[in-house]
Length: 334
Image 1 (tube, rainbow, N blue to C red):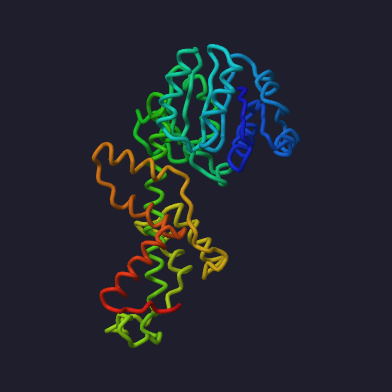
Image 2: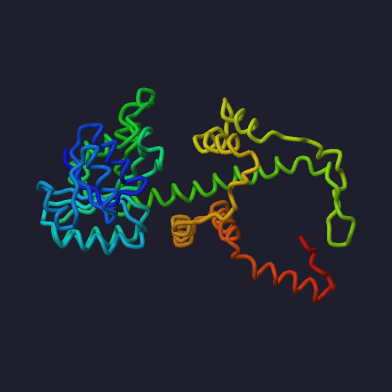
C-alpha cells in the first residue's frame, strides 16, 4: 500500500522504515532535504516540494503528518488545498484533540477524511512497533488498516487475549470519530507523567536512605534527623531498578529504561533535571476540570515539571520573604 509521510524526524523516519520493511511504498517529504535523501537511499520515493509530494501519490491519496503541534493545523490546510474528495489526511503527532475534532468536521465538508492517530513508541518504535490510538471516519480508518497493522507491534500477546477484542491486542485501536485518537493519547501521556514522577520520587527516597550517615547542621533553620540509625543504607539504585524488573508488580517498560539509565550513569550526572512538557499533560488536566474528574496525581506530576524549570522560583522567594518578615529567618546558603 502507498503512503505519503511528511515530517521525517525521530519518529517519522523510523515509521517509514518500518512500513518499507513490510513492503509498503512510501513517498516522503521534509523541509530537511538530507532527511529525504537518507530515506530515498533506503528505498523511499522523495519529493522536493509539497506540490511534488502530493503529485507523486496515487488516488485516493493518504498523507500522514508527523509534525510539531504548533504547525500541524497550518500544514493540514496547505495539504488539504492540494487534495480532492476521497483523499485522507492523518495527523500522527501530539496535537490537541480539540483541533482534530474541528479539522475533522471542516475537512468532511470538502470530502476529505481526517484521521488523528496518537502514536506511542518513541525512538524504539522501529523495532518494537508503535501503539496506535486512532480517531476518524470508519471507512477511511478501515482503508488504512494495512498501514496501521504494519506500524503496530504485531500482537505478541494476541494469542492470550479473549476472542472479540478486535485489533487492540495487535497494538492499534479505532477509538471513535475524529479527535478520539488524540484524546486517548492525551490521557496516555498524562498517565505517563504520573508514572515517571512516581518512579523519580521513589528513587529519590532510596538515594537519601543514607541520610543518617551525613552530618547535619544544628541550627534553627534545619530540621533535625531525630532517628539517624534508621537511615544508614547505601542503596545500589541500579541494582534495585534491575531486581524490580523481574516479577515485581511495578515492573514496566518504563522501568526497563530507568534501569538502563541508572546502569549507564548511576548519579545521572549527564542530566540537569530540567523536565519539559509538550502540552498533553495540560490538556489532560483541562479535560479533567471540564468533566469534574479528580486527577491529583497527574496534576502534581505536571506542576513538578514546572518547578524543575524554575517556574516556582518567585514563589520560593516569596516564602523566604514572609519567613524573614514574621520571624527574622535568614535564608541558608547552598
